[in-house]
Image (cartoon, rainbow, N blue to C red; front, side, top):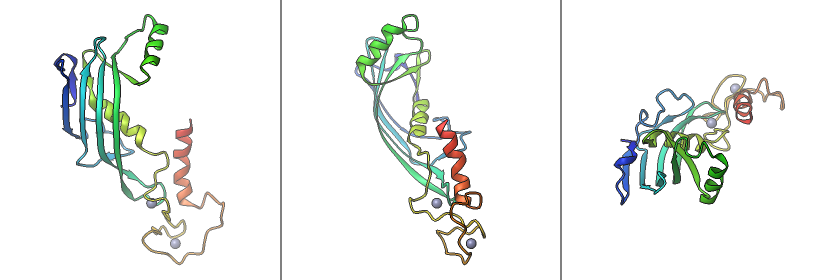
Length: 186
Ligand SMILES: [Zn+2]
Ligand SMILES: [Zn+2]
């Protein structure tokens, strides 16, 4: 269970050891990557006096991404140390300035939880999005797809004559890289 009631965290802290399921980390409808089996969250939750919750531990999982050049799926490992402070949603809303000072003092990553519940699945989902690279390549030297015959050039060299360098419209790999680059820069 990745949804934690704040009141269920004992004074001495709560250990969470969970195997990750796509539904629990809210990736059921995510299309840009999928969660491969075997992902884990191992962390410890501590309650602060000020309703804050401190999450420390480790997230390790493998995501399946699609290569932007050859379009083949590949596994991308995520191995992330966690050290996050959660505050109740709306904390300091009336007194924003004071709140900002307080957050700066913590010098930590701060997030917010809704109501009395902290959804660790939501946190994991965010961590995945932060970890996934903008440029997704199965390997740095991926040869991509031949723009002429469509062959995966990692698997075999085809006999097609080389395409004029710099003509991005005929380079299928570049055409697939382009929209992602644009999206992420906006
Ligand atoms: Zn590739
Ligand atoms: Zn070819």
